[in-house]
Length: 280
Image 1 (cartoon, rainbow, N blue to C red):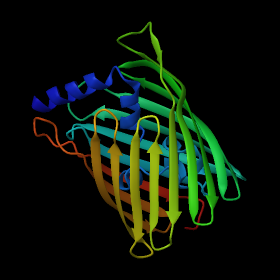
Image 2 (image 1 turned 45 degrees about the vertical axis):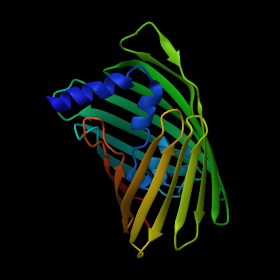
Image 3 (image 1 turned 30 degrees about the vertical axis):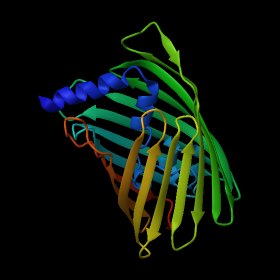
């Protein structure tokens, strides 16, 4: 009963604000969360569809799946995406499903589709998103992204939620529009380590992270995220990556603190990426 009341409270807070919905289902990757959410300047394959669509252009055909346990362990996220290479053009799609573990009557879907074009070490792209769920009548948003790479440094510019609007089930006659978000990203590959960062200029959110390869198939991940708007919040994250024969297994744990009731809300993430075009 206590869990049910807590979940109801969390979702009642999220219903009036599209930004809260975006935050909860727009960061599904364990690889990203282990590094403080700093995935925007990386070529990370189909998981990039929900971060920076330009990062889908890896040179490979891949599928990605993630599972997230969060909100006191009674709400789960499932995310599945894929990308396909057609010369220098990449086409991808994704579906995300948020649902309760217990009897609470709630679900939410996000469907995405996009394209990216790569020229040399640089790329740009766009994707379209649609939203459905028990609290949403309909919703739409568009994202644009780019990555510019020079030697070991990559820079990214992302615009999310362009032309976004959503109609809530509780207010079926009113469609609300939402301000777009400007996100800047940077990544530096020093071979012995990879440093990543991002800044969400609109929401005043900053994330930094690192990947440290220990062996050819195992890496340690760590990150920190800070939201420095009206309500200050901090996250510390850690995780691992195992890479073997075209398969990446990422595990992350995010330390977010606790609610006033003492219930811990630290999410646990597991992600799988498989390259089915051959090679590493």
